[in-house]
Image (tube, rainbow, N blue to C red; front, side, top):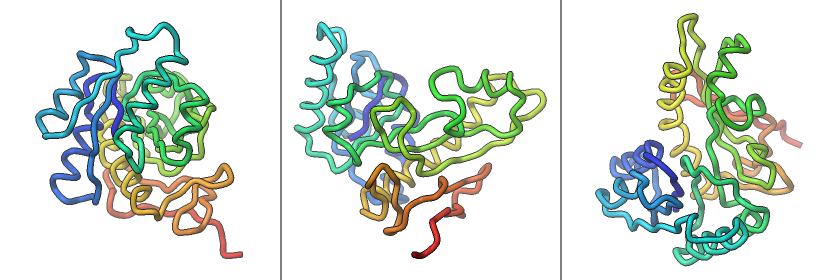
Length: 222
């Protein structure tokens, strides 16, 4: 299941990857907290069930989280993908899907958690920026990192230009990582991301447009 709040460009990347046979996934449903989210229309056009749990219908976050969790569980998804879902999830909801929920963040975590990452990276004079796929935990943008895609920061970059290049890499990286989790090669245990039964000592990395060759940073054999 994929959760969205807005336009759903990462959702579209999943839809395209599944349709073209580049990943072995089935999108059980698309869920949004926003009835006007364009991501819901993307789902309908692709023949994917579209579900809405409007945040405005609930008096507090706890009741919304319960309804959201029930809506997710009703579809019995193996994994849950946050793809531009602009709500902070409470600890009970996170625990309900622990180890099965992924998020993508537009920075090279642990740098620049939270919002406005592209402007902050430019103001700090970073040479590299990018995105990170991580497991969702109670700590905002703080779950174990799985994979990152890096892009160079150009001297004439604006936040908008940089964001556009990072978004291209999100579309490449996120479906690949989700397919690893769905296949069982990737898992979450003891607060750590594991790939092929070995703990990741650092995120898998992807630089610029190279999506075929990812450097897998694994711990040495015991």
